[in-house]
Amino acid sequence: MPSPTDTEEVPVIRVLLADDQSLVRAGFRALLDAQPDIEVAGEAADGEEAVRLVRELRPHVVLMDIRMPRLDGLAATRRVTGDPALDDVRVVMLTTFELDEYVFEAIRSGASGFLVKDTEPEELLRAVRAVVAGDALLSPGVTRRLIAEFAARSKEPAADSQLARLTEREREVMALVGIGLTNEEIARRLVVSPLTAKTHVSRTMVKLGVRDRAQLVVLAYESGLVRPGWLG
Image 1 (cartoon, rainbow, N blue to C red):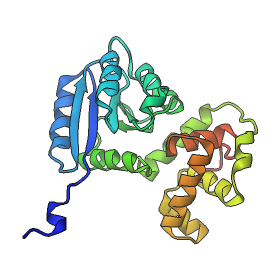
Image 2 (image 1 turned 90 degrees about the vertical axis):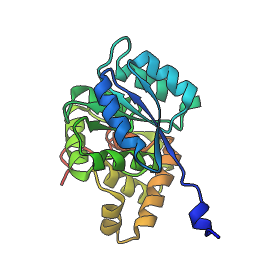
Image 3 (image 1 turned 45 degrees about the vertical axis):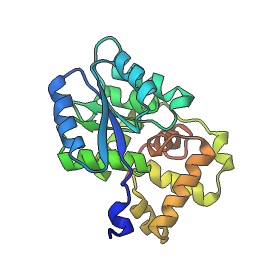
Image 4 (image 1 turned 60 degrees about the vertical axis):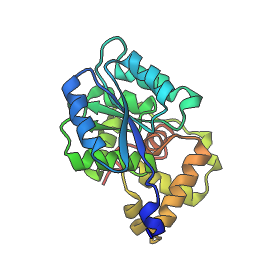
């Protein structure tokens, strides 16, 4: 008789591929479909088709190219993240350059992060699983470079009354997320367990009504809680 673990179904992460290059989609599909916990739900060759398929297929993650015909990835992301019915869908932008100028606007628009198209296969798989779990999407080094550039482009922040609903510890945790620390790094800094750090991050996101960690970073800067120059 098989044990319960032998028959237990593994939750499958459904991914939509949106890229106008068929070879890119084919490469991603081959990699993702080979995983027992990931499947490609569909493919789109332009932004209009991507938005239509997101609404039809309700994938967990969309790998969205920034530059596509008819409707670019940035506009498509705004449509997806701006639709309350698609609140559970996470968008990961695909770009040729690590610090593509459109990445910053994409994150402001609700994208959960970005990946360079020539990223290592293991990093792509880790990113898909991480964004669904609500964990940090990017490696700390890439995250910090992104945040540094984002901070340099940000306008002078203004005080945000939203932060008044946070506890002192939650504000502290939000600031640490804002400078690019992972849950494990936050735990070490505050001398708490990684689970406790993750719980603080999750509660902060719920209180502030942000979609994910990337949005928490944006709000940390825009609210003035974190300012350029704080990166260590």
